[in-house]
Length: 97
Picture (spheres, rainbow, N blue to C red):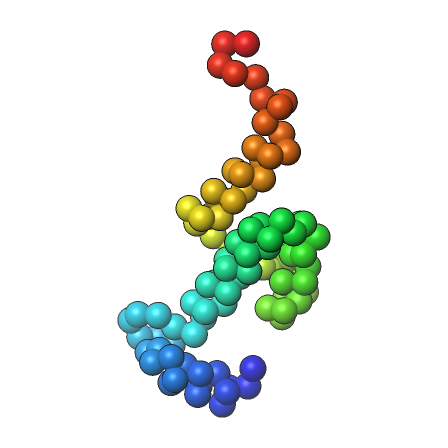
């Protein structure tokens, strides 16, 4: 995205200056990364296999650079818990066993 395009997008979205208070264009990257990850979980996709694609889309050389954009939201933790329960619950012993 060029500076002109990002400036227009930010203006359209009514973002404030990069150093000012409130949401900034940079926050859109965080939101996109977390939302994409959440959607992949909900779609039953192999998230680990898709992380390199997300990294590339964000312009990173590797997935570790993308980790800074990923936050453990309540919705994301819920999806991860559901996936864990679906695949591994039978291996977890109840309390006291």
